Image (cartoon, rainbow, N blue to C red; front, side, top):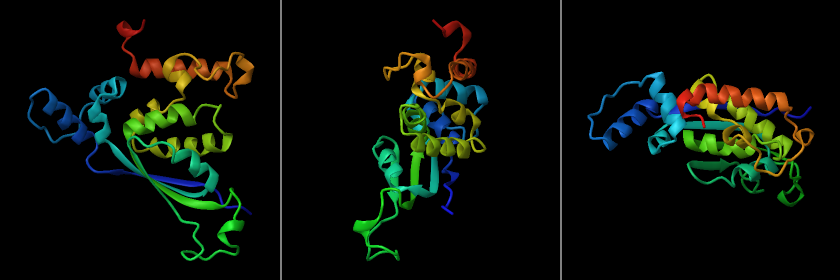
Length: 200
């Protein structure tokens, strides 16, 4: 029986408190050293201003396919990646490194900020991505939800973020998401992050 992917997440640092104080510095205000309001959080995520990068998570992905990690390590802004080595002299394995399949299971750690979570979600939750990579990032998204529902809500595919498909999928039935699902996701996203008088 193959091992199942396991994703765990935790906050690194003061997160939203640092985000608030960094934002206040930019407008000549004193530090508050406190948790900001939900209104502040939603507006910061909506604007994607630079203090959002102060919110950092550590993600551990256990039993992830080696070739899926290759997709994730391509992202470089706001994320550091650590993948367990396949070197024969650094681990016990039944076969030499040259004979390991691309689907060999490895472990991966990501130290990642909130902006990077949003950015990577746009690409890796899109169903033009490999389904195994989509499933891995969906597991990351689920691990974020108990830690921060605001950031979790912003982790959406690019079509939900933009309001249209930029991958060239013209027919509704060519996307693995149902059209109804995408409409619901887009509506929920706008309800969460767009103030009514700002929607054009």
